[in-house]
Length: 170
Image 1: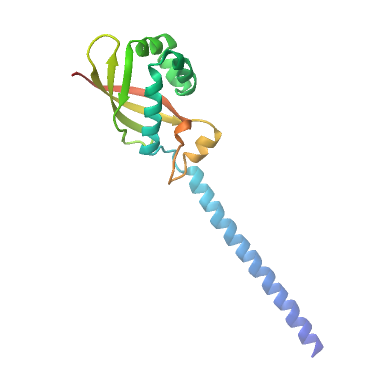
Image 2: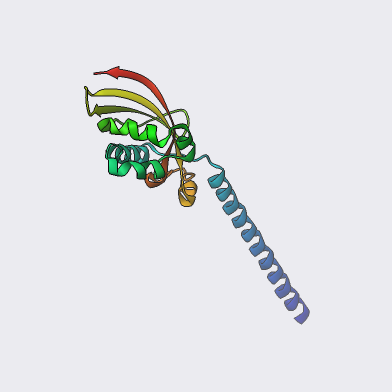
């Protein structure tokens, strides 16, 4: 009798041990799957974040005191290779103000089309539609950009490339 009680106790402990291993293994599989798909997901920028970025960027772009900071912080190194500081500065020095319309998502999760109204120092205002290819910078920004619900925070968004779509005078 005593032997069977010890045997039952041992078998119960073995069963509990394997159940714990099974549940730990399943938890690890679920967590690993979640992390894999979180980090394997493409980076994305939500339309509200893009709107916030463009609004703050263009409100500062025509201020001479802000242009160096914008060129250093809000555009990527590949953009700076394409557009020199002199060209960038000349573009914004000729504008008194620029106001963006809403950002419309493009075919890529990092592409947005924006129609800007430029108010030149001399001349009449005009609209220009521009495709912006954005990037999400910074360590935490790059991780958060893969969050399927929130995407890249506006403070980590950078302009990577632009493509001017049309030109029309008002």
